[in-house]
Length: 227
Image: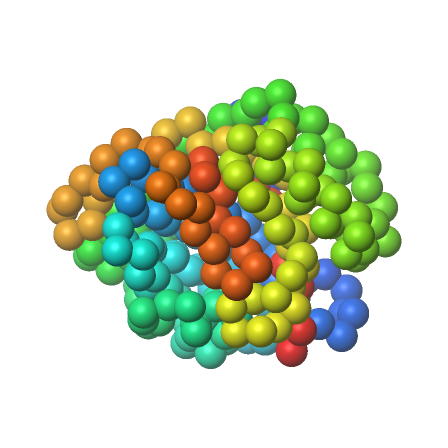
């Protein structure tokens, strides 16, 4: 599964059917914590029902303050749902460049450089297999997603997981991570300073009911929010 991560990820560009909610499709890193207390996340959504597709990078510093960078205006990107939990939300020049079938580099302006390499585990392989088989109706069920979240946390070793709940700004969300990979490598610098090795945060971070994994996870799928 790992060797074709790039081709699988880049094929997920179709907007889900309209179900009365705001919808996004693409891939990203749900969260990637560093032992230094920093944490990064990525959203690459080429399909959006509220505007142009966009890239977004979330950064949490060791003091616990979040900044969301987006390639489009904050009001039509991730800050639309999570901005109230951040210190700042701003537009930026963001690049997501694949350097191999399972590796890519993310840059934000001239400030942040993040190199990633994907891998797999027995748990990600099993959950990806399940995701491929699940009918659409189950992906829309809050009860099913709540159960998946409770199972996924210990199975993946990422701490608490919520696939449905309320965003920091109060909108109801539903996450459909249909395919998963681990992060075998996650190296980043900000203003030339190395963030150090990956590692769990002292306390698991969250924005509203969305919990940031305690180890790096790459996902392909869709997200839904109340308008």
